[in-house]
Length: 249
Image 1 (cartoon, rainbow, N blue to C red):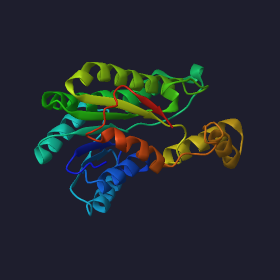
Image 2 (cartoon, rainbow, N blue to C red; image 1 turned 90 degrees about the vertical axis):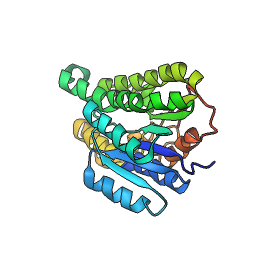
Image 3 (cartoon, helix red, strand yellow; image 1 turned 60 degrees about the vertical axis):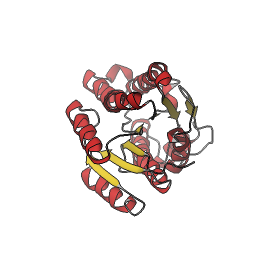
Image 4 (cartoon, rainbow, N blue to C red; image 1 turned 45 degrees about the vertical axis):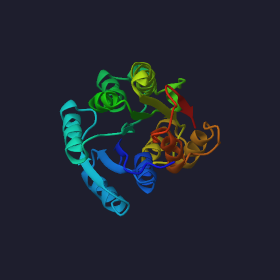
């Protein structure tokens, strides 16, 4: 597999899974457009990866339409085209359903599902015109099943997976392959926050909460960001023919 000269947009790219995907793609020769809300960590990631090739860092909120339009315009101005998109931006929070307020619900959908919609819409037209492109959704095992206290997060990840399936059906015949990866708990700062939240709400120690959450993964441990990146990279390959698949990790 080689991504040499492939232009890849990665959202949520400053840390965790997004940073790991960026590192793998860069090592495989891709030219990168990195997007995240946190400007300084994003710039640091871009500096570190620039040794492998071209990297454009664009601080932006992928859930805001105007900022995604700026992301699109700056990416196309720099590279002329975008060959692949990784929709990795997102967040995870929990709350009992009866205490799930509308603002919380809306935030989960904005940061997980709406961001994927906006970024995909920004680039898929150009891919379809060229008859070639790849879009990958970094979803979650929660896109396929439910769990207590995460109704908003789970629903937003189900929406992300539904978006993937619809785009695969609409744009697959036009040469754009759209897929998803669905990891369980990954050892990232976002999961660390979830562990603390579970510990606070259940009275468990953080160590016990972490162990209980890890046991929910098929591997009985937290996944590493690099393992998710390893699943994403083949789906970005120009030779990849997968379409409409949701890969469990």
